[in-house]
Length: 317
Image (cartoon, rainbow, N blue to C red; front, side, top):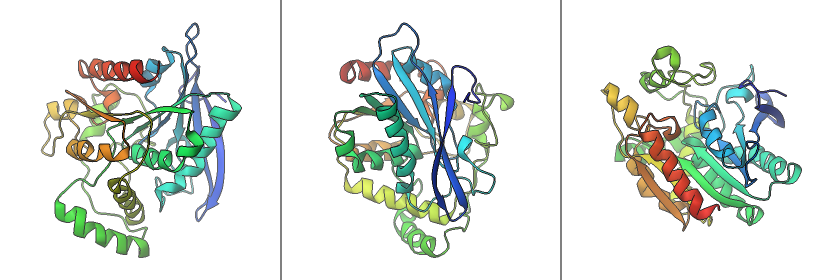
């Protein structure tokens, strides 16, 4: 069926196994490669936390180069969020393997693509890294590369929070998974993006709220367990491109910080832990990029595209 993005985008609902809240779905959106381009394969993109797929300019970068573009709205996010569900809530990041496997099967078996690039942003990048680790044998010879945009690879904050705090999260999160974690989100990043608040992007604020969604202990416990596994080292053995901003910024944030820095995560954590994903990881810190690097403003956006093009020319042609 036609997607909310309009032609040529289509959307397919993927039914998943019920969970404790009831019925569950994911959504696979698709745009074919541009007419007249040489067919190269497909891209599968996964969004981050409190997010969904709307980054059509990023998709156009790929489709103009002959790649069919698919994006997956994970369960309880975006197009896949059902009225009875708690947004974003899962207790294990490997839960997402069900929809990732289903999307992979549709793209490779049903649609006939024998070459795939996996792309992901922020929390989605953590999910994808573990999924690629678990599915190395299945994906061998098909997944040609992985692009991770500002991957969430560690908990931001003090060393005490990342050590003692993580142990508390692990114990309490197992018993009281639904407890909301106190945090302050001023919405500055969201306002800097959305057209209604002075930004340049148009997206559904029900699916990507300016002030994010609540974070629950069970979900955060799952994230910290995934971080720990990645820190021990994965073995994703295809070329991996990690794109980040060249700096992070913390409150109080200036207008320049909101436009030209990662104000959500710590880029130094990305630089530290990205090599643990596999033996062929390249990290590019893009001057002036935002947290979602493909939503950066010029001239940073051109730098992002140049980095993508350089990597693709070396590993995908």
